[in-house]
Length: 384
Image (cartoon, rainbow, N blue to C red; front, side):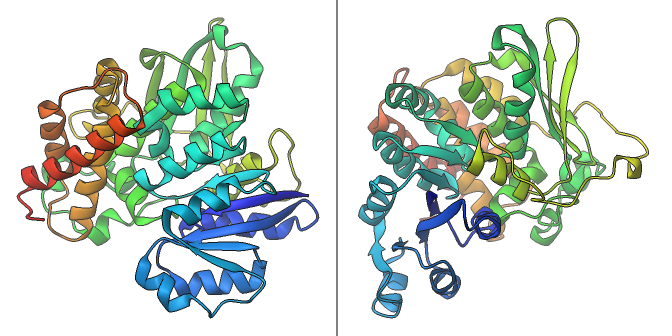
């Protein structure tokens, strides 16, 4: 029986992870759950899965729920609570489904405690890829991606050696504005940007998918996960979201991973890796696909993709600055305090003003993260 700590259980990935866990009661059990402030859903999850521990990171929510959960579940608070649930001796696997920078410290603590990680939080590797991968090697733990693209790459890479890889190809649906001209992005509404054509996801990643910033973050994530040079990683538009990634080898052959756009499949693969489990999703009828469409991304419209190569070239804390600026800019857009087209413009301005710490430790990364958040608000013209 594999005991799982699930961070971010009330989010989109968290909820789907619990769906998968529930299908395999003889293989998996929930040891701990965490949420920020959604006490209604967390209460339901605690009642249903009966974890030993649960964590809330919002003070008011913690106070509101304290004393109201079953005595079988101990309710913890904040960063100390997260550290406890990822480090507990009983835990075999930590699923990091927290959104953004919040997932970094718990991930590092879990690695330090010798836990395998199923990583749905791409920002962890964007912010601190070098630091995280070093710790993974030191502690001899597994870091298994939940992102559909990186899950696909992991599967495709088994067809050859890393030294035989010519290119990693990350596919992108193109989001809701794939066929919208650049000038048409001036008046995009929040609701339009949240209307993703193929995936059901949380708000932040859905906006990232609309700007294609998610592909920039995925390029950085792939670089650190697989040790592939940035210039060998490219993005290809594939509106159907059937092929999630491809690996081209030096002999010219290309291996692709195909599946319906359903996050439960990469979640299952990460939970059971390297084993596969039956009937996680319905069988995929290839006969229903008339053709597979690919095209190059329009980098004038989706400039965010280019930011990945810029920050990887600069190294150090540059990717952390990109991540922080994007988190703040997206949040401002969701609050209707920043226009859609200004998201990438503001981020680009923040990147141009940064100073880079070349060999950062965790404190350096968090310091640059704070700087970038403040600078993004300043450039966006929003007072704290």
